[in-house]
Amino acid sequence: MNKIMPWLPLLLVVSFLLLPCSHAQEPGYDQPWRPQYHFTPPQNFMNDPNGTVFYKGEYHLFYQYNPEGNVWGHMSWGHAVSTDLVRWKNLPVALHEVPGQYMVYSGSAVVDWNNSSGLCKNPDPQDRSCLVAIYTAAYKDRQKQHIAFSNDRGRTWTNYSGNPVADLDAPDFRDPNVFWYTPQHKWIMVAVLADARTLVVLDSPDLKHWTKRSTFGPAGDTAGQWECPDLIELAVEGTAEKKWVLIINRNPGAPAGGTGVRYLIGKFDGANFASEVPDAPALWADWGKDFYATNTWNDLPPGDGERVWMGWFSNWQYANTEPTVLWRGGQSVPRTLKLRRYADGLRLVQRPVRELQSLRHDKLRTENSSVAQANQKLRDTATRGEVYELEAELQPGEAHEIGFRLRKSKAAETLVSFDAVHREVYVDRTHSGEISFSKDFPGRFSVKVEQSASIKLQVFVDRSSVEVFVNDGERVLSNRIYPPPGSDGIEVYAEGSGARVVSLTIWKLNSAWK
Image (cartoon, rainbow, N blue to C red; front, side, top):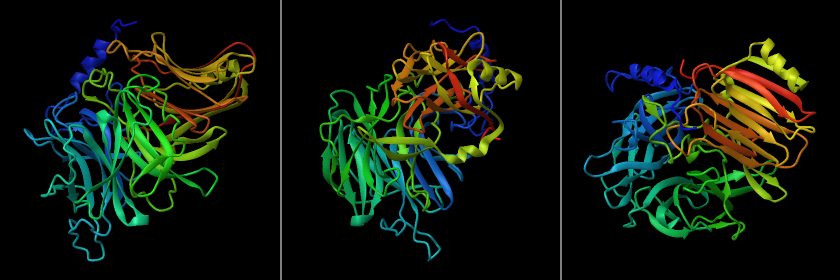
């Protein structure tokens, strides 16, 4: 299982030949395994999304970035902007490490609309706003919170001369997530004491002077670290009700192994978070292997109604060894968030942002067909691909399993399937292609689903990933894959009789980089 694939050296040679001659030269986005609609850096290593904020018509994505190489180190904030969350423009590094002093770890960004910080110097007297970034300065043995500000729409940044703005004299105090709390007209920061699995809540009138108000945790966790917290208010689907959701990224301990995202639903009064069901365990947001360090967008345009987040599309078990050369790491598709009520309580629901539909073309659709008829339609239309979106409703009938073989060739395939016996949807990447770089990479990753006669799947396939949204977003599985050249087959399969394809729609997706 861990043999080096015979085609891997060729792919690595091709990737090496595509390396830029200097850091100033930005490579294209057409290398083997290079995602076509998931954000990846032009080159080098990335991990957590940071500072996601909307300002003056642009979605900003900052991210943990190593400007010097394709493994973790020299952490700084990379930067990109988009007008639609799909097509991104790369910008220069926004916040650099200070060699010999500190690296720039994760954090958030806000729009200081009323210049509460006194840092906004906009020449327009009608516009008092500016962007403020809040990040962890990781010193050798302490982690402290710093701020920086920008008066030119995020193009250049100045570190505040009074840094640090928050310091608990701790080695693991990090990942500040800041938002404006309207009921009490103040800023709220949630950060973590990572090793103690503890959330820290602070508040401030001006982003420069912070007061610790409360702690929360470890909420049943007895191992691992807490990282990248977020505290957001979400609508309950179909009602006027809203609830506060505390998001905690945990490393390790996720259902699929390694890193993962947990959440709790509860109440927040401006100082304290309380879980709605105090003894209930936290819930998981994704059951795949590759979704971590999430960050929600601040200051979305009025009327959007839903929050949007993005997660790092990797896992610390193998993030430094994934078989890409020019770059490592990437981001999930942006997803909308809301709460949906089930018999056993409220659950987080995620849907890919609607803007991704702008990439669709060459639609294929079939309805009410057998598995054999669906496959014949795929053959007749020569429907294959590396970059596409698939929507399906499947009825197992008497079959104990029904699903898809994706990125299929003689050498590889990735299974996305519904196990009707155990009521599980799973992704199996055991034979997906290159897996030798980590013993933790191959595997079958599954999630339980509600009882029903059929299953709905929305699957986003890119050159090196498969993201599966189950039953209109009630469950999600996010996984990276590294198929060999020519692995572009799509096949429906069932084990047992009576399975039906209620509907199947496939759109090819254009590259977001062209």
